[in-house]
Every structure is written in C-alpha cells, then in structure tokens.
Image 1 (cartoon, rainbow, N blue to C red):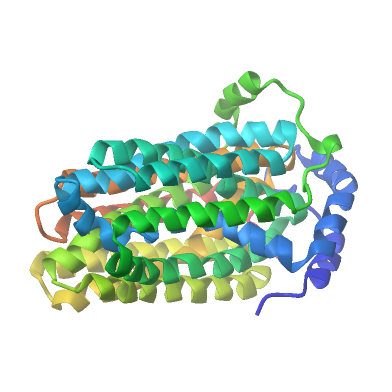
Image 2 (image 1 turned 90 degrees about the horizontal axis):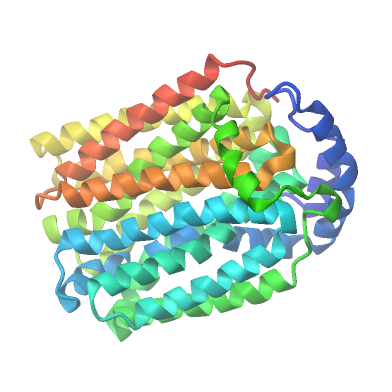
Length: 438
C-alpha cells in the first residue's frame, strides 16, 4: 500500500540528503534542503495528484510500446515488412528516447521541470498521430522517433522530480512505489492493445496513445513546479551538454549506469522478441499474448513493493546486487532451456518471469544511486542514466532483430549476456566506496 503523502513529506523533512556517496557534494546537498522546502510543501498539498501524474509520466516509455506489441505481426502483414523491420519500430523509438533525454535534462535544470514536460507531451501527441496515419514501415519508424523524443521528457523529468522532493533510501523507496503504480500501464497495455486490435485494428492503438498524451498534458499543466528558480542551473545549455563527460568520470556513476543499462538491453530484447517467440513460434493467440506479458508485470510490481519495504533496512546497493544476480541466473537458465528446447513454451515463460521480475530491485536502485551524488544536477544525471539505459535497449532490441532466425534463441542469448553484464557492473559499485545504507 502506498504511504500517506503527508507522512512522506514529514519523513523527508527529517531525512538528510545522501551526500556521502560522492565526496564534496555536502555543501550543495545542504543548500538543496533549504531551497526546496517550498516545492516539497506545495507538492505535499497536492498529494495523490502529484503521485499519479509522476507515475503516468514514468509509464510513457512502457505504454508507448507495450500497447502495440500484440499488433506487431498484424502490422508486419499490413505494412508489407518482415519481422526484423517491424522490430526496428522498437529500436527507432529507443533512438529517439535516448537522444531526447540528453536534451531535456539540462533544459529542465535551467528552466524548471513542468514546461519542458508539457512541450514533450505535445511532441508525443504529434508522433502518435503520425504513427496512426503511417502506411509503410519506414514512415512508422520515423514517427516513432518523434513520439519517443516527446515521451522521454516525461520519463527523465519525473525521475528528476522525485529527486527534487526526496533523497537517499527514501528516494529509492518512493521511486519503487511510483514504479509499482506505473506498472499498471505495461500490465494492461498488451491486454488492452490486443482488444483494440481485434475490434478496431492497429491504427486505433496509436489514436488511443494520442488520447493518453492529451489527458496527461492536462494533468501536468495543473501540477506544481518542483524545481524553484533558486535551485536552477544557470549554465548555458551548450556548456551543460559538454559536462556530460565530467559525469562519466565517476566510477560509481558508471557502475549504476551499467547495471541498469545492461538490464535494459535484456528487457528490450524481451519486448522485441516475445511477440514473435510466443505468437509466431509457439502459436499463442495474439489476444492471449497480453496475459503472458502480464505475468512478468505482476512480478515487477511485487519486487518493487518488496524493494520499497526492504531498502531502508538493507540499503539500495545491496538490493541492486541481489537483483542483478537474479537477472544473471535467470538469463543463463533461459539460454539453456532455449538451446535444447526443454519445456516448450513454459521453458521460455518461467525463466523470463524471473528475469523480468528483477526489475524491481535493479531499476529504482540504480537510478537513485546515480542521482544521489549530484542533487544540483539531477536533471542532467537523470538524462544521462536514461540515455545509457535506453541506448542499451537499442542494442538489445536491434540484436534480436538482426539475429532473428525464426526461433527464440537470439532473444535468449541477448538476455543471458546482458544479465551477466548487469551483475558485473553491480560488483563494480561494491568496490568503489560506501554503499547506500539506511
């Protein structure tokens, strides 16, 4: 159950910022406590509306893709494209999503969070309409890039907004709670997408996304600003973009980015590969694909809830290590069952369930761990982490498309490699300094 917003506000007011992760940031962290009180108070008064809006914004990456997953085979036939080309609609989306985040982060640090999000939502609406009107695969891929640039503003700035309002293990706890709420989108997305496909065809799925974008835009325009003018970074945008290189010199930041990035590569291999592995290879009806997809989302929701309860006790770094270990083991198990054909459909579903469920321990903890050391540059750090995560997703989904051979093996191989890579990066963090203990 989600905590009472007033309780959250009181708890944060008493909690110190996690300035111990990157030495030298204590002064900036102390300043943040003093200047962000008004923003926290304003957000606290809006309570559940802020929570719901942030959850919706963080869910845009999922809903933009999950809703049309059951339609991919039908789109392949309608647009006269093979499976590998249609899977590039996922990769193209990730290209736009990664590049967009690098832009929106510094913009929000300079001008605040709310208006950049609103502009991004307008782009998302335009891109979704373009997808609905597409009649060939490459036009669709182009509009997916536009859609993604817009959606990336909501996702990257929602994470920064959480950092504006919370810190340390408390931020990890709230991030997990937000992700539990936003998991409703991928839970119902494929189910709803399958029903829309059956009733109105795949074009209607993208018109539905136009409606989602419009509703979220209205909510954002009624939301309070979380970054007061006194906390904004006055650096010119060009200079802020160049400073991404400075961030990449921090070993712990690289560890957090890599742990999440490798995992995202596996997750998007799963997203791009399962429609064809389930529907085309194992002949699962498109209307039932959503049910199999939903099983993994239930696992994500469960581990996010568990993470929010355990993080104050064990610390986010330890839970991150446990999550990456689970991802590596389940990825290797998936490669094993797929290579010998053991278990048929369930030989895919069961290892994939454990791999996907590791999300609850990996994503929130890796993001919050990276953000904790740079409170004055939360937008830029969130953008960099997101770009690395989704850039890895580009490689994961593209590899599945490039290696496609009509079997689930390419997907399984990519997931196994990325699971092991995520674990190795988490081990890099454990050797780079103090952990996020509660």
